[in-house]
Amino acid sequence: MTHLVTGGAGLIGSRIARDIIKEGEQVVVYDLFPEGSFLERLLNEEEKSRVKIVQGDVTDLPHLIRTVKENNAEVIFHMAALLTDASSANPPLAIKTNCEGTINVFETARLLGLKKIVWASSATVFGPPEKYPQEYIPNNAPHYPWGVYGACKSLNESVAAHYNEQYGTDITGIRYTLVYGAGQTRGKSGAIIRELILNPAVGKPGRVPFGDASRGWLYVDDAARAAVLTSKATRTKTQVFNSMGDLHSVREIADYVKQTLPDADITLLPGNLGNSWKFETMLIEKETDFHPQWSMERGVKEVINITRRQHGLPPVQ
Image (cartoon, rainbow, N blue to C red):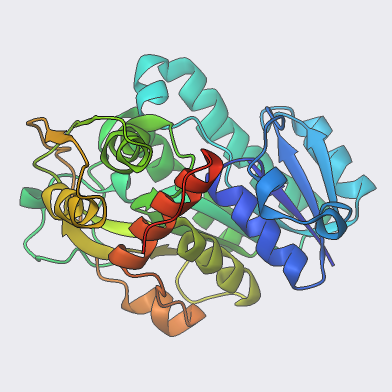
């Protein structure tokens, strides 16, 4: 079976492509900027031979449909998006990319009768914690979107429900929280990871924004595995799932990095992200059997060592 991954050269999409390839399947990476892909270091030469890379924009519906048809793709993982800061800076482009682009993926599924669509929603569809009476926000809690990016994802959830109910498509979303991994640089999360983990890993000082924040830290391999497991679950009862990794404050992560790298120079700058960070995840666990496998400590050390290896430095133990 062939799987198409939009944003397949990115942080999560590249890991999805890797995991699908390792299962013996074919992958088409559909990405606006495929150069410098994470795939270069994730796959060996034989695995790379089973990946076809197509430069494409999700806002180009004819090209997307043509690519799916020409490659006989039956499943789409839709990970392409304009992230939080870029969406705030350019709302028209955010709506075009994140809303119109996502609807194009859904429309492709409808027109071609695809087997499954798994797409990346976001926990930013929810508002600040004070909006909710529960400590852990349930899967069906009302939306109070946080910013343009969150509003786009909230709209997409409603559109996905429309396609499922009106056309019988099989579309399932995953609300990601803070997904982290080596090489991550984009958006607010990327700024935190760069200053908190990547810079200290190679001996550079870290000046960490949003130092008062707490988050569910989901290692990128777990984020990819959640998507792959969801793709195997046919017509889940729940159409979009909460997900979450280990709950920790930025300060706790900084303490662990300093424990691992005793010479690390890390300064936490004041500030909080403002949106919610605690979510019920029982439905994704029940319906897809997804349970995070990477603890914070294991994930952070992996990011440190991958980064050090890329700079010719020895790993830490």
